[in-house]
Length: 410
Image (cartoon, rainbow, N blue to C red; front, side, top):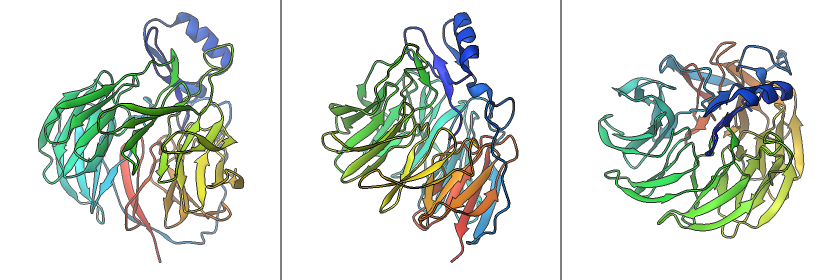
């Protein structure tokens, strides 16, 4: 789990960054307007840290991971807390330069550049790719769509604030979540606005938004800073249901943090979500009724296999939970306080990135660390969720803009 930011706004939501309690209290007294506080008194990969990252110990790999290629997509950013990750569609990888003006397409197998487009916008969200289009969002709320084959700009739209999560391509629509919690749908063909959904947000929230996820039932699922899971109809944005995953409770704004900011997993029979307040749960996709809940503090999101759900908790422990009951199956704590990414699953193995640019492969049945590779340096964290193609190639990106692809040798 990457260390969160806290954002504070006055009348409307802000973002995130956790400091130690005493420093937070002092900082809050001096905040004016919209201010971001860098979190846990820890800049990812450097600075003071109340919990020092657990040093890595040597392992004997039991699987062979092959690095296919690596390349830079720009200078990147290390201080804004973005969790950008690439998008894979077919045999291409699409990436934006973190907080930079470039968007590019690469060949999945070789890393060869197919096209690169320079814009006047600073990308902070996305990309999403599908249906012949690549879509990304900017720090100023711009939504840009590009032709997937050439990189030519197709259309430009705007939302109400910065875009810090990947858009969703759903049929003939693009659905975009902005930093203030608002959601808007645009026509895939020309960017015309179709519908919008607005929801009030707490005054103090963690910096990050759970990207919208489409279910097979035509509902779009979103997690909110008040600990609520919401389902909207993709066709018109009408709310189908909402369910409290974690109730904001406590005397202070810090105590009441309950954000659902990580990746939501949607199956035909269950929706899985995790809250910073300390709950992971499975919910009925049609009604939102809870199936099971498990007490666990998580800032990142979830991944799943046929029988398990995987999550990294706030201390850097990776958990496997039984998909049907939520019962703990195993935990891996040798990566404690290494600020792990949301897990991914590659050929059955669980993969997490950390604050020093390492990727760790874990055995799905025991959680044992079976392989390790590195992309970035000591201050170049992997914050975004690694992405896995249909044929098993994993692509990960660091905050510094380094991109690499791996496959597991058969």
